[in-house]
Length: 144
View: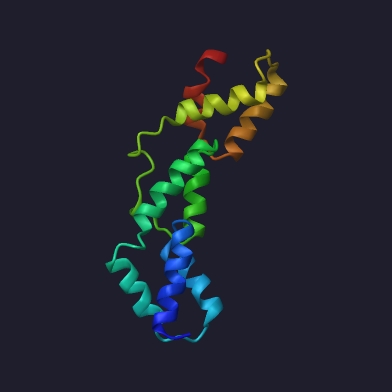
């Protein structure tokens, strides 16, 4: 695959959704593993503002927060995608993590009273979803 083909394939991939630089490189390597043009195409995409790790991280954080995931889960997932933590600030996006945590708690308890054992089970679920102990504690003050 030559440079124009890689460029067109990149635009095709990016037209569907945002990708991180690492993610796009991996996808393009599947089409042409030994291409020397790949680095040039990636640099051109970044210069043209078609590819931006910060924009990808911001969109990803908002999406996962709306799906009920906490900051710890999101940070780990972004690290797996090749996004370093200096590319984003989880707390600058005006997401109220305590509200997200409380929403997940209420979904799990289904508007019924929970005993100690059920509450512990829900707290483990919230921790699994990526909410820190501090966020969980602040969100669930009214249930103590």
